[in-house]
Length: 368
Ligand SMILES: Nc1ncnc2c1ncn2[C@@H]1O[C@H](COP(=O)(O)OP(=O)(O)OP(=O)(O)O)[C@@H](O)[C@H]1O
Ligand code: SF4
Ligand SMILES: [Mg+2]
Image 1 (cartoon, helix red, strand yellow):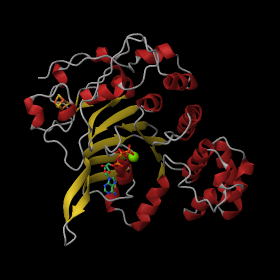
Image 2: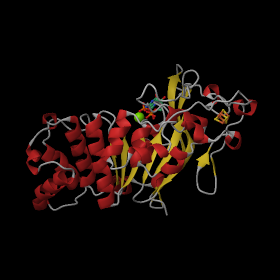
Image 3: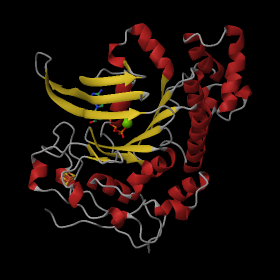
Image 4: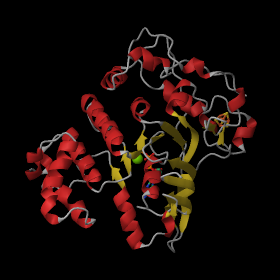
């Protein structure tokens, strides 16, 4: 049984209303999304800005209600939970945001910030809470004496560690990390990613890791779901997705990871035109206006997300006809400085990672 299972989630936000307050237009933020997260694993959700990643995150925590669909947590119907069950669920499922400063109350000391959830969920008897706060701070690599300080006294990386400590205070089974390192310097980024991985090993945590940065995702996730305009267009284990991306959108995203050496033989797969609006998504395959492989069928019929025997699923009518993904592997194995630092931080060789297929190469055929 999966820890968390989402099925056919739909969330359309009203974007315009008539004189009577009735919605007349909707943003199709999430448009039929299904996935499962097993205990102790990391599922990354990637895609361009506005594709619906954060909306999915908020839906599966029931911070907002879906228009339709199902969510199961440890097999139980989350959407049927009453307030008591929802409170108990919130202990098991936490979220960490991109901006580590905003969610920390500036008027509370770090000690108070970390004590609050302990009291709220009645997890630790009051006399032991101070000791637990010190344990939590140590767990995330901060000194226990920091408990007396206020959030503004810390750097971005330290604040993100405090946010992680607060999420861990309630001993969750699942943490949703919504762009947790995007606002941080590259060097701090790898420290926080290392910390998240270390905590996962020690505490058997599951993560949903939301990011637009595939370089980061490659080193943290076991599986990846690629979203475009409110839908998952490809999902596979990380190794397979990077080694042999199938969906044209995934290939374009991978090819956009920068390669540093100007002399490196490479060419990006350029996405044609602007990302269409979720207010007026294209008919058929919503990627068709930007897809170099689009055929007439693509303009009228939405492709289903279909999995092969190994669980690599793709939503594309032409998956079987597309050229081999070898073309998007870098020809000289070059990695960007960002990626090189991350690779070093995770103790892997640059050569080993390059083989996994981050990179570029123009594989565009004539239009079908
Ligand atoms: N409360 C809301 N009301 C109206 N529209 C919304 C609301 N929340 C999100 N949207 C719209 O839904 C779409 C998906 O937004 P979402 O924040 O989920 O995207 P995202 O993938 O997380 O983007 P980013 O990478 O920029 O964080 C966007 O078009 C956004 O403008
Ligand atoms: S080939 Fe067609 S179905 Fe596949 S991604 Fe392109 S437009 Fe969509
Ligand atoms: Mg977001």
